[in-house]
Image 1 (cartoon, rainbow, N blue to C red):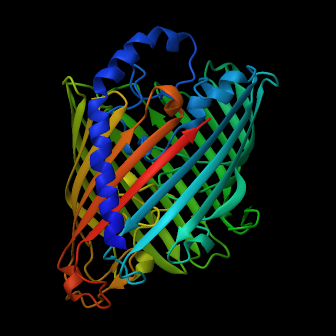
Image 2: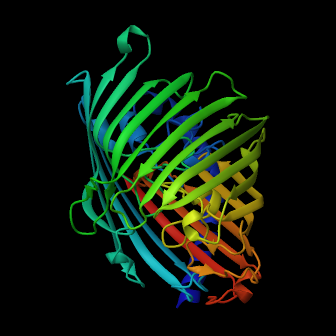
Length: 493
């Protein structure tokens, strides 16, 4: 059954690629003819915060803002790019989104599921925002419904995969365009929040996977961290997800932090941050301080760019002292070609230890772009992991089609430590450290005509070439390579 499903997905990929290529001329002509109309008012779903020409996709996107990872429904709504927002009065923003994804894999890579798995996962979001009419206040409400109607291993009862109709955002904002006469804008938020910082390697909101971390508390933002400088300070309580009951925070647990950004120099953009997590009654009982910095150059056509991020972590978990660290580096180049093309070299290291409690803790990070599809798959975590060789390529054959391909090799940072997320570990170290290679391909299509303008389609395939670690590790799920595929459709109104 698994092999048959994989064959169906592969055939769908070939068919859709043919459709995309065959429609390129028509799409380009239509985009040119309707450009003036869209500039005045349009209900076509486009991304207003990526490519400067308003194209649905961009090769310069980065992990924390990746097309297949986070969908910017708020940006589309506020720019009247959704039908409901376009019809609503100026003081009201409305949007509804539904996403359905089917994914399947064979030859598992974990101790718990050694064979294969398949799932249908659904996410429905309702976003409601009041602005202008109650200046200087703004109100935001987001209701989200996560379900797994098809799940082979009981994921429909897990809060990681299911959360029936609950609040992901419910906050009141106080906005100042000239805070205390400084000339800088500021915003104070109170309520249930979604947090997103940097490239989301520690804290990220809505994502490609099935989990959206939410927090109850306050946040203060000042400045413009996209062009000049910015300051963010927050103090919150993490919200625990319940499948069929209302979510609520844990009074004994706190997550707080601060981040300062500077964007004055194109070749030396900087983020400096400190996040603090203190859990009182959680099973893991984490008390972690996580400072770090990020230095990068923004991708520009015809130029090299880079990114360096180093994160350090200290504190204790279940009264065990820890010190861990994680480092990311990349060098990219955006080619000046007729079809936009970008190539990136990737390096990652996350420290590990034989005691799992001493591994680097990723907190509330995203993983889709740099470590493959998440959700029920998610084979790699940036914890006790070493990946010195990796590449990612992005190509836009036409403005509304995006092809991404990546290939990375993975080792355990400490061969006596656990392969995080798999339930596998060899304390003797005799199994070695080479986990294998992973090829990841994804294709996105945003049709721009007729009723299909409300829909985005995504298809992907990944293959894990298992390393010799799986030949020797106790309770190994087997050495056969893992094939994973998915199809996904997202509708926005």
